[in-house]
Length: 290
Length: 196
Image 1 (cartoon, rainbow over the protein chains, first blue to last red):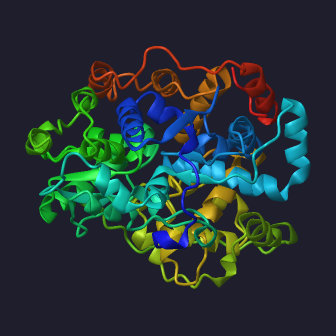
Image 2 (image 1 turned 180 degrees about the horizontal axis):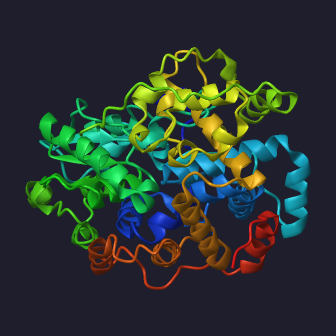
């Protein structure tokens, strides 16, 4: 999908759904995203008292529970502005719930009556990358304060954003990360595993199944000659860091970190100390160029 | 990556075409919204699946179990729990069968019917996550991991990693919780599995 097929942004106010990972384990992704948004003049307004999107656990154990969890967030987001998520799975569950409640008005009304709030079934639910594309890559480029020239990255989408469940009904994001980071001067290295699954929750339950996969992904990035992987999913980022056993120093950036870095954010040290694989050697020459 | 080569053996199971089990194909087809009778066992799903080494039946074999009406085998296998819904299979299927949706449906049916779970540690994990969500409205990862370790008795596994993540402040000691917990409690009423 090209940017000109989408409606341009009418406003820079957005509701923002951080999700559990960005609120805790991957706080560095949240911080850098906020930094980037501030520089671009986006007003990301956190949904007040948001709850977990339901995640695969609720989805597995009870459909109604999963729907209710996602729906509560939709009921707290005003329909007047787009709802933005960063985590691909959160985005997917929020969108699925929205689609489901649009068709199932009975359940929708029941929940609305219970909470005394209307559920936002008409407003847009979009990924932050889409906000950037609609904002315009030329405008984005004009806001950059630090060139990513020379940075070779593997765009690692993970499964959900690259290959959304219920394929035909969902929006694809393939190529979006490259478009954005190329506009900021970086060079994509696509001949590595860019959407091989990171292992998801098996990383917690069955690490012996996940380690070979993570090693395969990291190894492919090494072989491709890239400096780093950039990922759009906080869980992928964590799994690629904690489950690798091969000796490789190739760092895994959150997409928001690279974005904020290019836009001139200064507090990157705070994000990078939270990484298990230190990314600072890779960005040293970029940081100096600021 | 070293893939364990699996012998190409199909389990020998007698097809059960009794009336009750004829319904299995129909039920899974209806609930998953995908036409699984189109499967011609090309095994593209099994070859693409990143987790096939952890499965007892390959994804195409699970489809065959359903076609044969082998309800018990289909609902109690490990495969449906090892599947994380990455949709590699669904995107590679030449017959456009959404295999991940089938796995999803079988998991739900297994939970609803209360059959023995093919991979109990994974359902333990999901239950632990739900306990956290019920209590706080959000996932508290340290609590989830400790609860999971208590359930599975695997205290020493990943201890070094846990400490490393604590040191990097990637595991919060205290949960982030929502204010309107009563709204979450209400949602959990439909969740009928016992939570201690």
